[in-house]
Length: 369
Image (cartoon, rainbow, N blue to C red; front, side, top):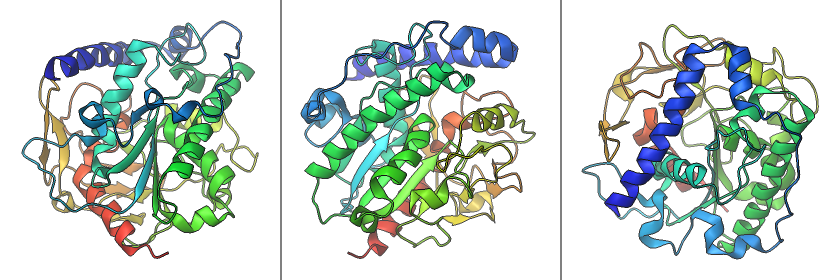
């Protein structure tokens, strides 16, 4: 198991290092040339409606045992036996960086390995639930977020279609009376917005949502949130609400994110450029505000080989700025995967790992049928 994880980490690190090098040192035009496919969009075969009934379509789900990366815990931390009576649906971030196609093949080994590493780090704060589901899906390639071409939109639509099929299987399988926690990071958050609009808003399912964490992608207060059918979280023990943030250290340059944000319309079909977006402070569980590092219960700090990781309390503060981004103060030393402009996108969840674990428990415990 350890050897397999080391192979996984090696592949993941190489992929991310290529991405970091390109984004740090190349111009925007060269970055697009490197990551945006220059081929036409070709729609792959449609997935069968029952495809997600198969175990191999899930990175995490009940029944996978030791092969389930979402069950991991940081060094020195054991399962405390406080089972969370909720089902968790988690949509992982972009792990396909190739420009050979607009969407990742389901059997691409590098994309699969990196996705499993993301799940290990980002889904683990929610693993007090024994019912975590993380689908494999034909995600849009990273370059789709650097282009406003029709092909980029088609690639994102294809990824979304897979996620919808997975979600429908999830809902049909889990306890119909249990509360549901929805989580998405980066591309996963982008798709989660749409899922909330199309499967949750205005339906009986909306009453089962204990919390929706759309992290690492902007949620427009005017053009997205009303269509998602849930309000922003304004209290730490409030169930049935949305949390969202994007982490930057000082000094920050948010221009790349704002350009990506403006490339796509909001959930209401209107342009997003200049639209204010939701900032949840993950240390307080409320929209906006400031929290000192002393309130941070534990940042997940990986070791040098990324074989393991430990929680370090009091390491990182959080402040929602007027621009909607989450300011985490001077750059913390977490590893080499910080994006240009002091963008801590890869660490959005790791920065606040222990607080998120507490946050989701509060909201699930507060949920009422």
